[in-house]
Image 1 (tube, helix red, strand yellow):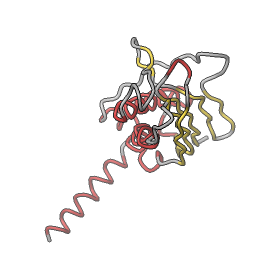
Image 2 (tube, helix red, strand yellow; image 1 turned 135 degrees about the horizontal axis):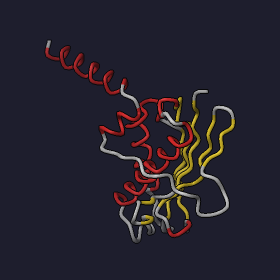
Image 3 (tube, helix red, strand yellow; image 1 turned 120 degrees about the horizontal axis):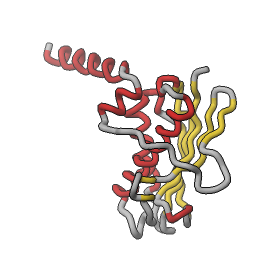
Image 4 (spheres, one colour; image 1 turned 30 degrees about the horizontal axis):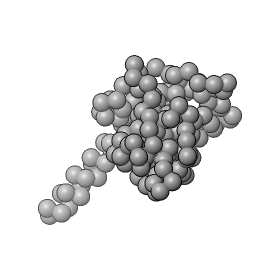
Amino acid sequence: MKKTFLLLSFLTLSILVIAQTPEENLKSLGITLPKQSSPIANYVNYVRTGNLIYFSGSGPSVEEQGYVKGKLGRDLTIDQGREAARITGINMIANLKNAIGDLSKVKRIVKVLGMVNSTESFTDQPKVINGFSDLMVAVFGEKGKHARSAVGMMALPLNMAVEIEMIVEVED
């Protein structure tokens, strides 16, 4: 009886969480989306073709503070890198909202490429990029689960800790 009650409670809670909109999920996570940043070179933040939006690489920029900088394995811990990836995710959600208006139009986060500024011996890039991936699932639920690559880079622009690209499928 007790197990059945716990199972039903869990299922009810799961349905309530899934039923929330991405904006409601952001609010419950205490996240306020920043203003969209301008590209740092000659490119655009995203290109839409049909129902797919390709997002340019974005980094962990914090309003009024600049980028989270440093190399994993030397300057930053895994937890600091994970937070940098999470910040990048917040920025990319802001760009996504700018592109489509209503985040409920997201059908799927399709593909993510996570680049980690890391030393030659650092091999925990997937743990760092989990900061981004976990946020996508927390905000978009099942639609936030994606294919992903997490790779180490010798250097990233402006010495950013991470740079992330993503492809998103949206409704018409």
